[in-house]
Length: 287
Length: 287
Image (cartoon, rainbow over all chains, first blue to last red; front, side):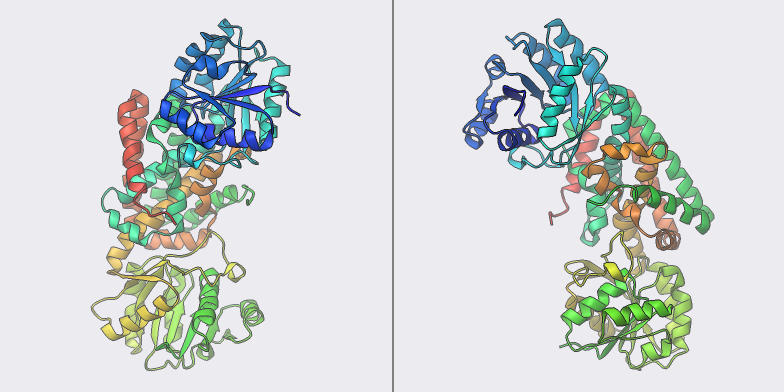
């Protein structure tokens, strides 16, 4: 039993497509409506999901929706939000998103929707892949993933609970935090690892790509996310710039320490340094 | 059909244990002998592998062996090599290893064995795990892995070919390179990624480990190898210090570039930077 009547997904890429699949599978009978900017994307959605109403016309896609989920890159969200408020929106509509940044997104979108008497509450399901596009979508993408909800003092408790129950139905673990706490947290466990994977790839391969013939699982895993979409990640990094710079500066500081230990040939200190990292990494439960 | 008669594995941890399993599975009938420093390790080997001759007595473990594989951390290899040369060694014995560093290992071990009229040729199967110990050993660990052989001008071609056929039998792809080329290559695709995983873990978690509740696959993969054995990796880093520092300095340089682009809010440059990393990462074939 769901409190939602009809769910609109805006911009069906990897995450939007996975949402469609997960909703159809876990909320049988739910109406799913899709807005896509490009006609080809609409046709792809119709081909993949015969039961879904898909359109490039935003008013049509939003008609009667009780929940709308923004799935475009974060830098495009304010413009899309303004287009949405020009449409006829249901009285009980909750607008949310799946963006990897919350401070800039919530402070940008909350007033746009408030002016149109609509409600925006930020969501961030910690799920994704270096792959992109609806072709790589999976109904299981959200299963057991943390979903970070970032209500503000303006968010009604009842609507936060409704949004929470949506994510729970998709199999997420839901955590609530402020947009600022979200951005600090996600800078550490997602944006920093992404940046480090990019730096590792560049430093490993810039000079000679033939070393790839010798690469094993360590290289593969450590650099996997560097295969992610450059435009999407540029938007994420810039929208969470201060926290990302902070995290990178912590990593730079540890890097200087490490190089210093190597120069001094200080095996004892190096071992302690590596043991400290191991103890921290071992806190992550095995899957 | 193998040219080997009897294979001795010295120090059966994750790699040595996996070698035993792979040999028993892929070279049926081959005699396998094991030396371990600790009596408990010998008992564990006997319990796991009834057909294997295991001893803390090095002379007994090496008796009649045509191939001996050193599987201890690289920093202990010279001492073990000296102990080996005090034993009665077969005339056709090839000694090799599975160490992650080759410059220091080969220049250290080749003369020790040469003085005893024995032959050392370095090997480095690019296989492993953050896990350790014989309990995590797997017969498939070497399957499709690159194995880097590092012969020197002193290595007889016939013996290099014999060693090569051993690794091919275990399912490896064999590449030959000089010890120096090996250390440069492996610094880039293995030691640097390991160091970066350690730095990512420390910078992500040093301040607040509760962020782990929000971690997803990106954090998991990017930091996986930071769970590796600190003592083993301290030895690897110090024995390949110059190349590791070089690789870290390249990464530090890219990190400064990235922070600079973020400070300038230069989306165009950031996108190009991320696209360059993606293009390089995409060169790695999917598994």
